[in-house]
Image (cartoon, rainbow, N blue to C red; front, top):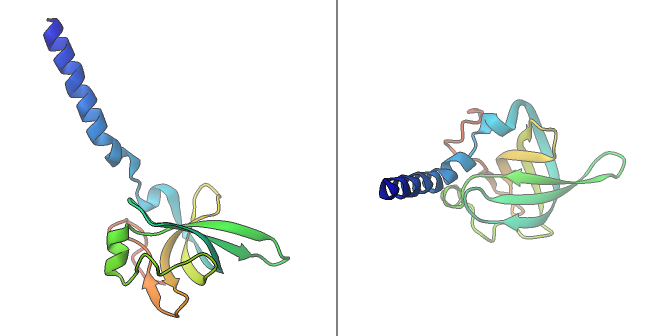
Length: 137
C-alpha cells in the first residue's frame, strides 16, 4: 500500500511539473484589450530576448513632459527571427515606434503588433498564434 501511495504522489508531482509551462502561458485575450490600441514612440531602455516572449522597455515622454516606461511584449525569439528581427535589432538608447494594444489591468504593458526599428524597417512584433487581433494596423 505504501509503495502505491509513493508511486501515485510521484506521478502527480511529475504531471504538475510538466503542466507548469502550459499554465504559465497566456493568450492575448487574457491580458490585453483589443479595444485599446496604442501608438508609442520612445527610447529603448532594456531588452529581454528570451522565451517565451521577448520583452523590451521604452521610455515615452507624454504631453506635459512626464516619462512613462512601457513594457512591450512581443513574440517568441524564434518567431521574431523569422519576421526579420535579430538579437541586436534593438539596443538601449534606440528610438522606436510601436503599435499595439494596452493591458487590461491598466498597467503600462503593451502587446506589440508592429515595431518600426531604428533603421526604419517595420516588422511584425507579435506571434501569429497568440489569439490577438488579426488585422495588422
